[in-house]
Amino acid sequence: MNAHLVISVLLCATTCETEQLRIWDGDSFLVGMRSGSERIRIQNIDAPEIDGECMEEIQRADRAKIRLAEIMNGGRVKIARTGKDKYGRTLARVTVNGTDAGRVLIAEGLARPWSGRRLPWC
Image (cartoon, rainbow, N blue to C red; front, side):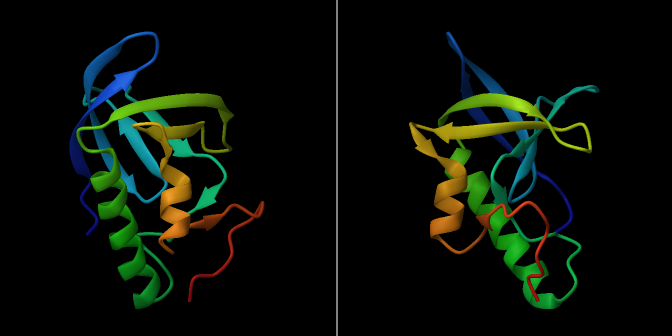
């Protein structure tokens, strides 16, 4: 499933506003639907790659992507930005209705804690 998933959330900072997110995979998404949208990478987790090394990784990546969309869809999302990664994406802690989205994915076996480098999923 290489296509992104589009969901609507209440993006909350000081106030909450409806926003659309494009979910790319289990640990990254875009805020907004326009050119120049902010690319977010959930910090401190590693999710499998959509274009993974083996079928098991690709299938797990699809499940992680779908699950992240389920977790976030329609929720009150807070993005606590902490910096940028080497690809220019915003690193952030992401909570949905007060629950850490990355921790949910880790607990469900769809991501793992970030060790500082990519580890194989195959």
